[in-house]
Image (tube, rainbow, N blue to C red; front, side):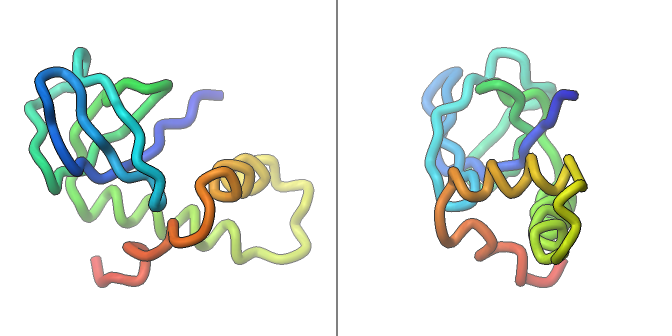
Length: 103
């Protein structure tokens, strides 16, 4: 399964953007993104490439979904939740800070 991860664009320098993923700043290529991006935009990232600019509401809704998945207790056989937990644990504390903002 492929998982696209939403992130917030912090800076753009040519075909490379600095993107915030749950408090972790990563460099993302913009070679294949479907529309121009600017700081403050949200993009859907797949293996280091922004593949689509997404509305902020969609990005925040997806982050909230990940947050809600992590709150589920006692569902260790949920493979999607396990994948999301692993990504979040790798990102470290503070990843959910945008999830509590109203959509």
